[in-house]
Image 1 (cartoon, one colour):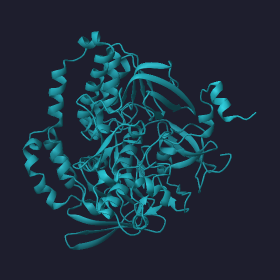
Image 2 (image 1 turned 45 degrees about the horizontal axis):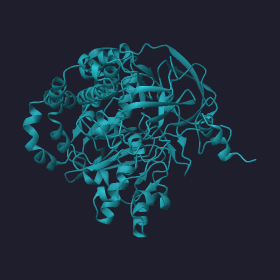
Image 3 (image 1 turned 60 degrees about the vertical axis):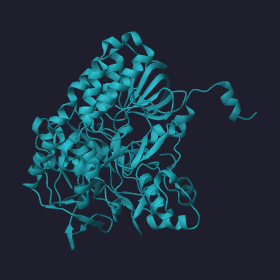
Length: 472
Length: 98
């Protein structure tokens, strides 16, 4: 398998081999553009189609049709002529479209005429008391282990939170003979009413029937508690129990494993470090890049496709990938545009695929107490900073996430704010009586993933570069 | 905490965890193999020494940091196992020379 790019420069570099990245790279390569697809995982598929080429869970009904839908696109990308490198971590992208990528312990540097970012989503932080205890993981983590290694929970297992992924995971665990003791549904009552205006679009979308069937399948086999408004994970050095409150009653359940999930948010680190302008999305409660209808960002030559440009799901991501790729072909090789699907066909399919999303966004808007913690609850997992620490810093003058770094090192650990950034923004906004847009976010910079000094030093350098730092 | 599916017929791969032989499967990540092993594989954080296990399994949380073949601070959830791989559970900061 290739680990280093074959060339120094490409027409198009696509980052991330999930639905959007696979579709984008296949499309630009089919149009004859030199295309490099870089992906951090061992195989293509992103998170939603993780391990699609290698999963031991081969009985098709267990992972479901939406999972296997990815197989054709993986084949299409592999046959397209795009150069695909797995286990390649992009750690820098700048306005000149220069890319630094770490692979096999060494870094390579390439330039592109167009970059399509398809870095997807990550799970929203779920900062409850005890969420750093061993035995507490995200639902996505359990799903990753299920898909790529056929592993299912077999101890006392509680799943808590809300959203489509939570029900899909529960169904998959049960189909594979795993254990679920209880599902704690945190969806707020009021959200059902707030989502009503969007219900018609939803019931006529494919989400509806699939979602209902899955919830029915799970509810037939597992205990479900709705209206959960408080969650605490407890234990000494290891999860021992989960305590919840729901509609006035409180219960403590012994547990070995707690799986948390309250939706996904764009993975913005690379785009922000490249200088792409973002805004606070009040409906999805996260930072989203500002893009035009083709996915183009505020940085000339960089487009974003898929969930990284705002959560839309896999089907939407594929179409946004095609659209961003089409725009790249239009600007770099207009004559080849005839080879691609007609634009109106793709845009119509996109409108169709986006139907029902508003309903999900409003229904599964996470409750404030699960986004904005208090007291000793850890906000920044890496630097072990609590909500009270953040509030204390605000009280003595910290104005936003960047100042807070100097006070408390929040966001300066290895995860670079991925697990605390949204919490810090909302917590500081609330404490200062401002909106998240005014409070802002961490200023992100390369390297967006930690690399060793040796790897950095081994990079190409001119004589002038060397003279600048060597004495004598 | 986790068990393997009956239908998993991938080839076995032997890795070593703090010197002890552990059976993993081809295609497991280091973190998945550690969690499937049933052993106590909790690391200790660099800041307070608090025990942790992997949280996200997709490369973003860094709670899976582990020493692999003598190199510290590797993200165990992104590295596939290989026969004979030497894994050390990392207690605290990465050490100089590792």
